[in-house]
Length: 492
Image (cartoon, rainbow, N blue to C red):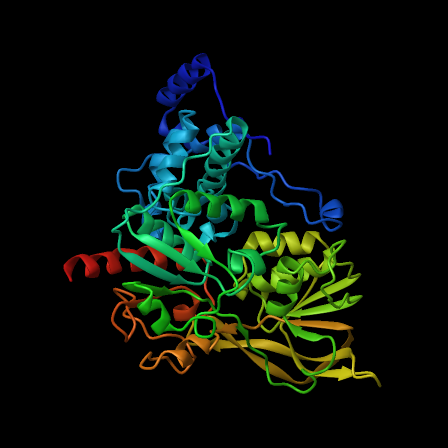
């Protein structure tokens, strides 16, 4: 990190004068900042974060590109409604602490969102620069800068806020899971004065932020720092506690919780149902990433087993597929393939993640779909049979539907296959709570306006309602559910 956390009064005056002197035309002439990155040849040898963060100078210059629109559409593209012009203009003035404070008004995890949210499809897609065929203001990079700078400053000054405790008579609410939806909900409810208790099934707090996203994209220390702030806000956490097994829903009610927010994610992997998926060496991306990210597979001193394939295929084209293929390279794979049945243009993964994967030596086999895996005499996968595809008419999602090219099948040698074609919610929660309605996909039925389920005072959000979705959408659910639960409690 090269963030500078302080500026002199002279610098502050100079920057303010510069800010006032820039015309809109001059601001628009400034090119978008480029994120400093580790060299690809080095980064595949380690787990260090690839994106290095902006310096203070880079951040101030990028912030000066913001035109401070009278009707900022970027805010409408943010699921948690961050005051984007507000925090960016603080960065332009060199008031970095104030920028971070603006972020914290609506986001419990700004350092996380600044790294993993698809800003190019959300806030940045609404930036007025897009109408002029210029690159949008780098809102995500600036969000990360502000959050990181505030954290670095607190670490250097040992400025640890005293833990706030809810009032003795505060209403108690429970949270199931500790992923982004849960943490967003917990932070918002703590801010509103509730006594919040988060229950996590695994041994680490953070949910998908810890087990699903590799450290080269989201370091654990960043997640831990955000959780530390929630603890300081009075949120309590219990790990190794499976709601529906360790504790029942009725147990929570008996313990005095007046409301429950369920955000236990979607950790049940999907497979394609093709021959050979049970061979040794074929696994889900969920299992693979959990073993490596959360359970330390491959790290010195950790006993967690994991297959280290020499030729690895990752099936799918989303961000989880990119995380899996890039992890495989870091685990020593010589050849890694992304196998995706549509073209690259239809890939749901972020463009930056696709670029990083290519830079790291991943081969993209687009317009291909596996139809069978082949094994050796010991039952270990040795090859995959791929059906060549072509694009037909758009399907219900608007993307062109892939269809097989008759007779075009090829065999590719592999010794490990990681399947990343989607996830479903674990049925433990719905099966353990009578009267909780689910969809045919296994997701919980929740009112789209309030996120309350079919059981009064039991709200739900994130992947257990949406299926697989982004971190920021989950956070938006958490914030909305908190506002609606608070409203219902106060009106009861």
